[in-house]
Structures are given as structure tokens and as C-alpha cells.
Amino acid sequence: MNKITQSEFIKLIKSGEKLPDNLSVGGSLDLKGTGITELPDNLSVGGSLDLKGTGITELPDNLSVGGGLYLRGTGITDVLYIDKIGGNNRPAYILKNQGVTKISCGCFFGTEHQALKYIAYKNNYSDEELKAAFKKFNQKFKG
Image (cartoon, rainbow, N blue to C red; front, side):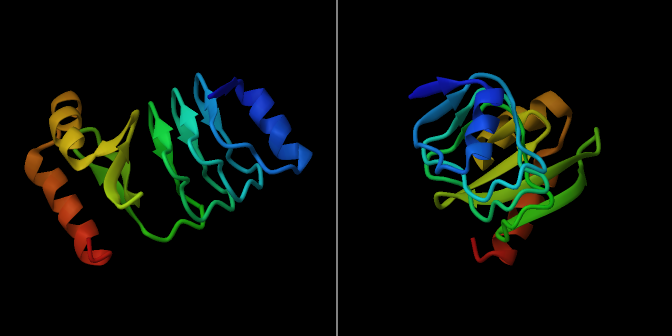
């Protein structure tokens, strides 16, 4: 795994060269409006990953995000955007990543099971509300 900073990542994008696989950014990675169209496989981001307004159409294999994942305004089509969920009325995204349904809400990105365990506890969401959101996603995208 090649560890780099956000500014080094941006320099790689601006160079026009294909980003190498196995990159790791320790903190958050804000790529909104950069024009990036593809992320490298095995990308690891320690904090949040902001892809708003990019040309990204799919997430890479083995993407790891330690915080939130922000997808509004991307070309990713198999995502369900939920404007407000839970007691804190936070936006959320439910999507498929490598065949696994995952949710991003606030500083969380993980599986349905992890969401029901963590988000419901931390953010005062009801299990029923999250289960209904996942059911809606699965119906829309034939889960």
C-alpha cells in the first residue's frame, strides 16, 4: 500500500496519468469538482471520501473508507439517495459495492448489519427506519 496525502493525490490527478492501484490516504479525501473519472483499485481512505460533482461512475474494487462517502452529483447510478433519515435528519446513500449493499451516512460507511448495529445506536435511528431504507434500495435495484 502506497501512503500519500490528499495534496499528492490531487497532483496525481492533475498529471493526467492513470492513478496506481493500492493507494492509501490517511485522512479524508476531498475530490469534489476535480474532474476525476476513475478511482484506483484497493483505494483506502482513513477519513471521509467526497466525490460530489465528479465523473466517477463506479466505485473501485476493495474500496475502504473510514468515514462518510459522499456521492451526490456523480455518475454512479445504482445508488439510492435518502434526503433525511433518523432523528438527526442526515442524508444517506445506499449502494452496491462489489456485490455488497452498503450505506453511507454522516461519518459512517459500512454494511447493512454494521449500520443497524452502529448507526442506529450512535445517531438515534430506529431499526425499522434503516430496514425500510434497505428494503427500498433492494426493491429498486433488485437487491
